[in-house]
Image (cartoon, rainbow, N blue to C red):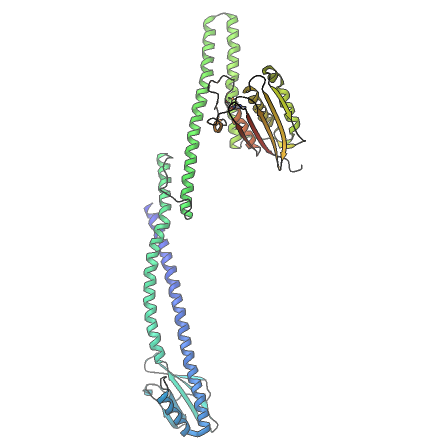
Length: 460
Ligand code: ADP
């Protein structure tokens, strides 16, 4: 692990240092090349301009005029003195001004009269005398030249700067690389440590230290990771709780089952035994229905539930459900009204959708006292079909409202009404499996409204 750490850290630092140093040095080198070429260009321009000027002097006033011009230039000119030579027809130098130690350049075989620049190398291998020549009208050759020594001295100073800048760039590159690596890679390692700890200890209460949700990508990843751990911890505790509830809720009917069976065995009376068997059957049905519902909810929630979808007319479906509960409503003297609205078709599994509305209506009747009313209405809202089941019943307290969708949760503390506390969990899971949502609004003593929102078929 630490080898990996070092390898990754080192690789990042080296890359950063290399990229930074190479790009800085490349930039300086390009500047150097541009400077060198522009200095050379400037020297060449001076040589050519002076050659043109001396040639015209010579043509106007001969050698004397040229020599005067050279002397004047030497006295007044602020630039370095130039090499000037006039070669007669016999290639004899008739005029020569070699202000510096020209001896170190091989000036004898320079130029043939065209004005292209020719060079002669000095004693210092980099020093060069650059000379331009021109053949004048009388056949003499005029040459003007300039050494690049001043240029070289300037460039040498620049080379020193290049060296210093390169060393600085390398130092900054390495330091920057180390700092960058630390700040970038460190949070990743902290994340790895936490993951490793969770894997080895199984504890999900560990968190990556203080990540900033608005920070860089790594910080965001750490914050998301912590949020994911929160969610997993929540789910695990909910699962544990729900398992406890299931165990608790199964224990009661099974204990009852055992007691009834025990009593039947002891009594030996056939009538009592028959009655006990009937009770056992009822309890077994209850347990079976609970286990089946739990499995249906799990399947719907995990997406395993196979929905045999078809076009379902909401108007017809709600009519069936109301008819199914007519007797129960009448027995409880609860008035049920249906306002099915316009014809609406949703794509879904008919039986599952029937169960959704049946559970909602069942609850509404169950939790509404005598002479109350329950109203079912359906209408279209954009791309969705809305169905509301409103009752004038007991209502649900705000402390219970968020939990009524939990498995086996029953808000009624006395548990006076029949029920397993699974009806709404099933409603929520089935509606979600159909791509819809369900929500509840309620005020204790003022009744409740459950709203189911389902996507309608695109053909409508
Ligand atoms: P149950 O089998 O207990 O009815 P549900 O999952 O269907 O289980 O509902 C969970 C709890 O929500 C119920 O125990 C009840 O307290 C409350 N509840 C559901 N529907 C209504 C309603 N229409 N009016 C008042 N309380 C309701």
